[in-house]
Amino acid sequence: MPDIDNSREWFTAGEAAAIARRNFVDGVPWTARCMARRLASEAASHQVRKRKGRLQEWHLSAFPDALRVELEIEAGAVACATETPSCFTEDDFRIMRAALGIAAFVQVDFERPIARRVRRQHVVVDCVRYYICAPGLEGKKVLVTRPLQGGAKPALVWRYDETRAEIATHGEAGFVGVLEPPALRWQVYPGCP
Image (cartoon, rainbow, N blue to C red; front, side, top):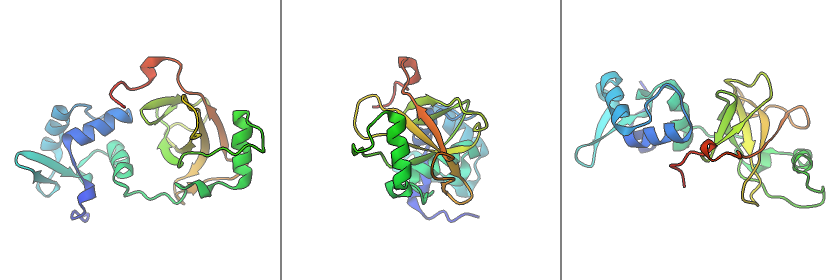
């Protein structure tokens, strides 16, 4: 049985549904009411507790696998060794600047890279769907970063090694490509800030 004392591993139905909506997780309810119904029927008694009166929260282990991955990222339980800007070498930064069409001598700061699973040929970063045309990535995790400057930010995608929890390969071999931000408003989830 998992250690269930960590408060960062407990989520209400509303919190879990919001994370499922934000990350477009398939196969789980996207509303708090439906999520609560499903968890009430599937969760064991040691996986539920009360929070502030009538509000209930469920342990991470009570959620379906597809949603559990996103909840672990949200809770910080998955500590990726590569989720720091230092995971990239200077050559990797050169490749990213070239892919963005930026001169080699111009300094560009990038967001903290995050691991995301490719679902239906897209990844979701901050409620935005970025579509991937590279073959063989469906169902696998990739490492995604974006430049800090600018409004509509393109995403830079790298191959990710799930067993070692780090970037799979540095240099051209590990770089998947640049994903442009969506041009259509419906590709951005409306409930996000």
